[in-house]
Image 1 (tube, rainbow, N blue to C red):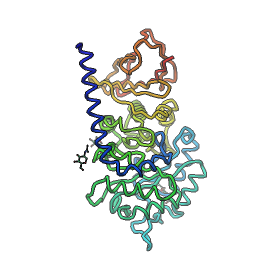
Image 2 (cartoon, helix red, strand yellow):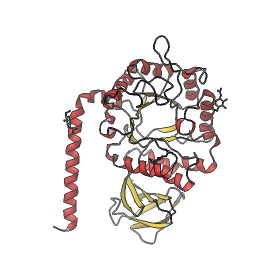
Image 3 (cartoon, helix red, strand yellow):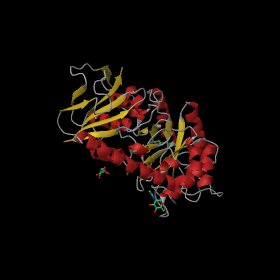
Image 4 (cartoon, rainbow, N blue to C red):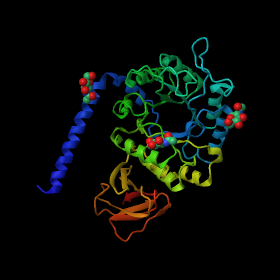
Length: 403
Ligand SMILES: *[C@@H]1O[C@H](CO)[C@@H](O)[C@H](O)[C@H]1NC(C)=O
Ligand SMILES: *[C@@H]1O[C@H](CO)[C@@H](O)[C@H](O)[C@H]1NC(C)=O
Ligand SMILES: *[C@@H]1O[C@H](CO)[C@@H](O)[C@H](O)[C@H]1NC(C)=O
């Protein structure tokens, strides 16, 4: 047996083992499958969700006038038109105490008109409203109640207000398994008669990729992102290993975008956005859109990169190769196309190469290569490979289309 045969046999064996483990996990969860089918049949998040969330930039400093002006900015910048449709409140939108019937209520000092009015404002502009709660007794800010023990009541409240998306955090919980606590909110949401995108945020603690697809549309795979290179590289690697669990209606979530928040260079933000896009991550803008620079808007608004993220096939790209900080990420797209990211994590310009064989295309296939950041077709002298000089901490992103 040649080395190639032996390594294919080994690869095959590993695949078998992976499938057996998958099947066992699935069997363990089949009693919940009836609920799942209902949830996944609601048609939500067939491609990764896109929108804006208040946390990365504003933390608890949010109020209804800020959110409304952000909505206006999403529309006026054209970001809404390229797909950013969810406007998501994070922590700190509610009063510390429930009302006399036990219902959550908007914080009167910051959201005096209430959430329903805000939802109407958002819907009138063709967008959708997201809200935040927690599978514990209090949310992470410790300023508002969590939904543990109030799942059905809170799900009804959200539906009455016209909420379209729920991010569900994990602070101040009772120590029971997230599988239980997150399932309860899933069942509650399925009863309210309104499709609500359900985003689980248990920080990747119990390997949610292996079970959360039964209950929700996205799940965090890691702890919180921050606006540093160390954070995005480490999160990209942690999220990468769960790729095979993602698909239409169920996505790995490496957390919201930091693009435009000022902690990284434009080159670094382009890498952040490119890798999030190919990992089929939810693309949730985390900056103050009202004061975003032209360069920030060009990154977030790159329609060719967004199209990769929103490709109907919904397969998460993975890291194929990494040597001395020079990486190749790739994944399949619809119409037999392939997306490739050449990512230089190092401190100096370096050439990175990829062959058609590396990315699963037949080795002598004629291919058109589109550069998604230069917005141009690439002409090459070597026909079946691609080499590019990649800027420090930068990347090149291509779509290969066989013809
Ligand atoms: C299935 O569940 C059983 C009992 O809860 C457990 O012992 C086993 O490890 C589980 N299998 C997998 C593959 O998770
Ligand atoms: C909303 O927050 C912004 C920024 O913190 C502040 O300038 C503004 O006065 C607040 N508006 C209201 C109505 O609280
Ligand atoms: C940001 O994330 C990195 C990687 O997880 C971590 O090492 C660092 O401490 C974080 N920085 C801040 C300011 O939280």
